[in-house]
Length: 88
Image: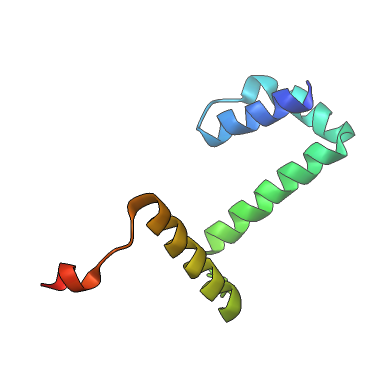
């Protein structure tokens, strides 16, 4: 199993496909491939954090920058919103 095949299998698994037939190959590949071990570990950690449901507070300066960037991109794509005319 190549790294590419392993990543495709991961995508299939996340999409709900049955992977029991390739579990052995999957395990063998992971045993000898550190980059794929890191990918799988990161996915496991992400799922664990998601399941825990604890929000992570962003630093205020980051949140402000993110909101400014999102607003700017929205306006580039859809135009600036005119709240005054929407309120009328």
